[in-house]
Image 1 (cartoon, rainbow, N blue to C red):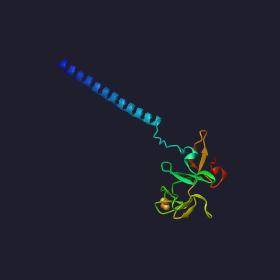
Image 2: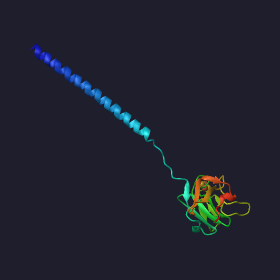
Image 3: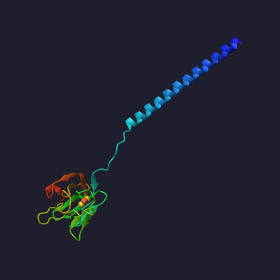
Image 4: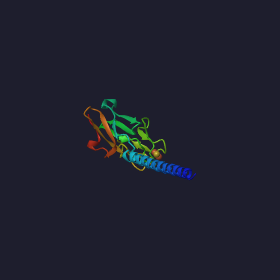
Length: 171
Ligand code: FES
């Protein structure tokens, strides 16, 4: 009888020992999984890859003289004037609406609150200057150049001063 009790106590000890061993191993496994997940996130940060600010607008012959072409996807105008090719931002400086070229008015107009901008030089106005409306600033000029393949490239992230020699592409 005493032997049976000893055997039962020994069995209890073994099963308790096994239970705590499994509990410990399970805890270690959970901790290791958490560490691995943290390490993976650390090595693969949440980075937002934005599109390049450089736009390839194709060859200059796509743009007839005195034309104003809106690239809706890029938010820029490519303008072929007597002075050469230049680029204006198409994003209104008031609250950021996309503007539109209005050939019948010979100006760029914003559909949101009615700002209007000059495209070609006219009395006291440079291309991009505000004609009327709430926009606080002119439409900025963007850097434009020709690449080795003869394509017009525009850097949307770089503003250039209006009417300067380097602000035009002449071909
Ligand atoms: S967003 Fe263009 S006038 Fe307001």
